[in-house]
Image (cartoon, rainbow, N blue to C red; front, side, top):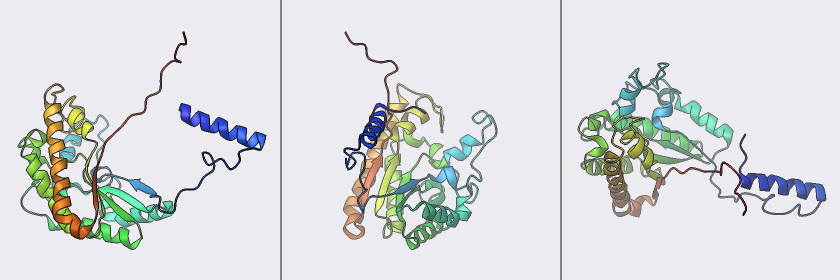
Length: 264
């Protein structure tokens, strides 16, 4: 296991404190989490739900069904089957002792075409899940978009189409309306870099579009606009009555030097 410099320092300090018998109350090593610290677990819809043919198709349903993309034939058609056995997930969360649970809503499950007609079965599923979490005293934290764009929208340009800013606002407003009374923490988009570069740059993930010097920047621009529109929609139309918070999740990486720095 790779140990970072910070972790190595803490371990060395702890050994020093224990062996010397001093600084045993050093708060850097021995401290308590505050009573309002949020202990949480996180998933995303496509990772765990299964039930792939119960509602609308997403770009990952299409991507994973292509044998050129998945060499061993794996898929998420069933996954953890959380669409049908969500209560088992809640029992697992309770056993962990978490206070919050971050999960994502499948856009295609509530709006099979991405816009327009609402799928009540999808709405009911998430309402039931949220109610069960609240009953278990676990606060829901909802991600609106975790990469599973409705395939119907991808067929008309997906994140490359500037209209997605309007589509995403419509979708976000639906979610705020249907679930906002019970959800106080919202994440608009999970890891925009992955969508913009891997989805529309390198093409290594769904929808597999190649355009690292062009499409990546167009998609990134549209994602920023979509996030802003969803945020503003909540702040102006929903926060006064629902009193929640809206943010975004950005992916980061930790790098260690490969070799020690030379001293001159």
